[in-house]
Image (tube, rainbow, N blue to C red; front, side, top):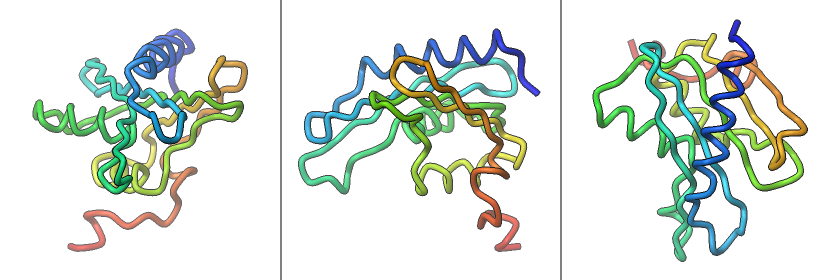
Length: 136
């Protein structure tokens, strides 16, 4: 699957990205580090808004930065929140992952201090997902 050194690097970069979070309403900071198949890493953080609907999650921030740069092939993402439990991607973020990633895409989640780390694939996290293949 994925080497521990690579996981550790993604978790470190996700933790750094979390420091850039703008979360004055929920006070729940999230950082993400997205690994592309060609080895580039895109960081993202959650950015809230007073009207809530325009809020964007860290995972989508990282994906959308990569997509803007023309990158479409991804290997893994690490997501770290500021809570006691691992920060699992929300349903909207999982759907974005389903749009651009294969089922073996690796999702690493962690709690704030890294004492609990969970690694799953997109297939495990979002079985029976709807994606581009469903519209063919």
